[in-house]
Image 1 (cartoon, rainbow, N blue to C red):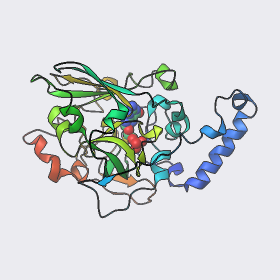
Image 2: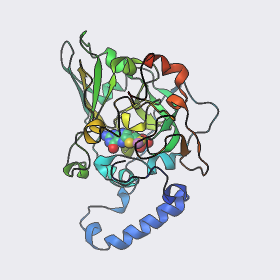
Image 3: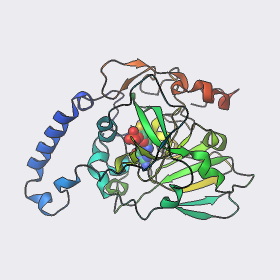
Image 4: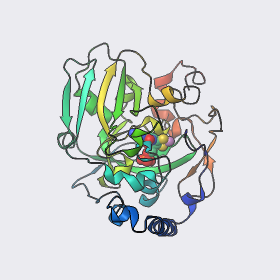
Amino acid sequence: MLIRHRPDIPTSAITPPAVYGGRRDFLRALALGAGAAGCGLLGAGHAASGERTRFASVVPGPFSVSDEKPTPYSSVTEYGNFYEFGPDKDSPQRNAYRLRTRPWTVSVDGEVRAPKTFAIDDILKWAPLEERVYRMRCVEGWSAVIPWVGFPLNELIRRCDVTGNAKFVEFWSLADPEQMPYVRLPVLDWPYVEALRLDEAMHPLALLGLGMYGEHMPKQNGAPLRVVVPWKYGFKGAKSIVRVRFVERQPPTVWTRTAPDEYGFYSNVNPDVPHKRWSQSHERRLGEFFKRKTLPFNGYADQVAGLYAGMDLRRNF
Ligand SMILES: Nc1nc2c(c(=O)[nH]1)N[C@H]1C(S)=C(S)[C@@H](COP(=O)(O)O)O[C@H]1N2
Ligand SMILES: [Mo]
């Protein structure tokens, strides 16, 4: 968002993936020649970011969109933001193969009775894995309907044993320059940390994302676990999280640190409050041509508007 000021979709997003992928692979083959490919840096086998593994059992969860088909898997995995892997929409898909997702732990600290560490393979067994098809809206104006796999974020928070002082919760993404080449560059003020008010994080709509389309989370979408908050702009959902910290006061986040006048702490989807440099009134679903109207709270107002009763949502954007 900071790097490419594109509130709209480039042609790559509406070109059929086969054509697009073909052209890109062709260009990369040309550019690499004997050089990087010969060094084993970017082997062709790495174009996709890993093997796909289905979950043994996933049960239907609540809140799923029923009147729309999910966005195609290829659009959701080939177009996105994961700035640790580069500034372009296809950087995550091209570079996230470098991410090692096992072993993987999430540490918990701050306003808790005792700091602790959870291993991903234990987290995966905490609760039945649900499929929840959510509308997602990026602050840049594109959107998608994604069949997530996961369980409520409040399952995680319940196990953290927070103190009475905890009012906000931070989610820290991995920031390892060995795996994430762009963490060496000042793309954002690393690490990628996003935060929610504790009652937002406890809301049953907020999801701990462990996969999508019935499969383990693709690396480019935030493997092995990430936050999914469908009533907020996409950047509130930190990918590949390694740390959860509870705090008493509203903390800075990666985006409020980087551009405070453009990205607010709340960042609820709101068609009536434009971004500083573009309107938020409409959006375009990945793979579609015509724009559609953006809905307050991304269509989840019935569920979540109560969290913000009495707040001025223009000031608390
Ligand atoms: N760690 C990390 N998390 C991140 C981002 C990022 O760059 N780094 N991008 C955010 C943005 S701007 C969006 S729109 C969503 C995109 O998620 P998706 O690629 O799974 O659709 O991830 C969010 N989470
Ligand atoms: Mo975004």
